[in-house]
Amino acid sequence: MNSHWVPGNRITLLENGEGYYPRVFEAIASAEKEVLLETFILFDDKVGRQLHEALLSAARRGAQVHVLLDGWGSPDLPASFTQPLIEAGVQLRAFEPAQWFLGARVNLLRRMHHKLVVVDGRVAFVGGINYSLDHLAEFGPLGKQDYAVEVEGPLVGQVQAFCRANVEGPQPTRGQWLRRWRASLRRRGVEQLTGEGALAAFVTRDNLEHRSDIERHYRAAIRSARQRIVIANAYFFPGYRFLRDLRRAARRGVQVDLLLQGRPDMVWVKRASELLYQHLMRAGVRIHEYTERPLHGKVAVVDDEWATVGSSNLDPTSLSLNLEANVVVRDAAFATHLRERIDDLLDTCCQRVELPTPGRLQSAWIAVRSLVVFHALRRFPDWTRQTAGRAPRVVPLTADSA
Image (cartoon, rainbow, N blue to C red; front, side):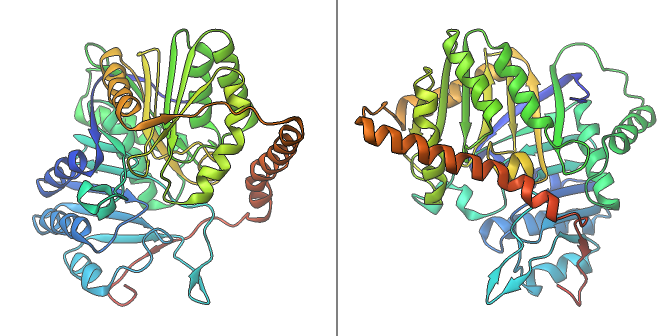
């Protein structure tokens, strides 16, 4: 793990679109010099149009605005949406544009899953919230539950340097963006790297140097846990070592609570997670299903001291294929606040999963089925990487191509 921890940050939790969008749109609209934005999904709906107006406002005042969209997650923005941005000087680019076959998108794997915003190098936003109406409660029963953080302090420079390196090409090396970060600190005369504020790290996952950095941060925190682990994650199907660490923590007396989807946006997600339930619960792990609406969060707290918020799920695509970005925080105040917000869901909107008592034949079938599916899903990303050596494409969008 080669993360660069920095103290002196202010980390603010933002919950759902109601907490996130006003802060992001206000920051972008007031930008003076630069806006860097990377997102998996941007739709031409109420939320997307609010972002559209904020980006136009920044660009028309002379700020340099760079927007990187995932080509699969945001495949069909109309020219009426993109052309005004391009004409205002916004640099729009698509990561791995969607490939269509018989009316369906077929290049699903290895997506750019970041949700990042940096404004003027003074504030950054990192999390799991896309730009679409389904992150607001007004969307109805399928409105997503999700989280992000607003960051102020030295860590902003790391996020900025990472996004700037992405302007030049996909998947910057850690050396590239850390060198940019240190250079930006020197230019701005930033000396306050000690003192009050949260200790935090910006941790990314790519398919080159840092394939397991986010997972390793999780596992290190789980192994060091003394009292309680709380994980709320939308798509939960981690690898053997991650599961082993959770089971060992529970067996040594740590209270381990998993908050998973009870009303999933995709049924197969719940079915896959259910294959792990007995394996975990027999070791003492407590599993809760969030039943109010779809859970889209990717957050965790350990011992009210360590916390993470970001884009990375705990499934094969996020841990082995997608480009992801999380903030990891060592700060008691922030970790306690996040844990209290998760506990509120556990107390009011979740159902505890009970360990079933199947017959002997049924138990044998469940064990065999789980073993086969588990290993097939975990091996799938490795098979994919071996056959997909091509570097991902990042394509500028122009008035003609949009």
